[in-house]
Length: 216
Image (cartoon, helix red, strand yellow):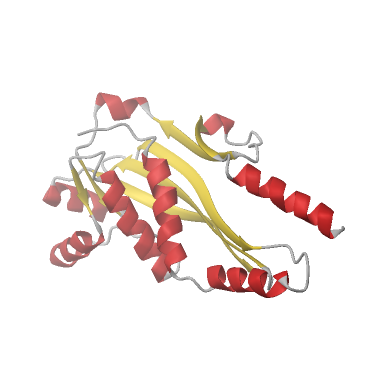
């Protein structure tokens, strides 16, 4: 590929990046191929959510995820779900209540005891579905995919769920020897930026929660 061709490809990529929009699709369309200019959020709302909407939900710990990712996801979930539910028990309050009630929220029976004691009859479970962390000297990529479920504690029935992935890319095509250091610098900056975890978690959670009806 010549420098002129590479420049054309890069310019086209920048134009496409500027046209990306977020779309919301039902889960049964989740496997449909998404256009390059689409950020897709897949979601599903059960009828039971409208018949008997919960007023409160506890954010369960994010399992099988590094601590920085789990902390970022749980904090974002508390912040954004507070705009949809009357009450959200976030990670700090949850841990305090778990200690005082001596329960394990991974066990259904303990979750029900927690619900009775706190009068908070729903829970939110978030699972990390994908994580990307690629670094190739002049190009780097980071990504985070999540699935979030709002479930009723009494029977574990899922009332709402959503899935989404966000990513960050930086660097560039080394069009000339002079461009290599700049591309390498941008790629290394993204790869080493710890704030990207918080930023991606917030983007993913915020976009998913948009699909949850306001239950306040």
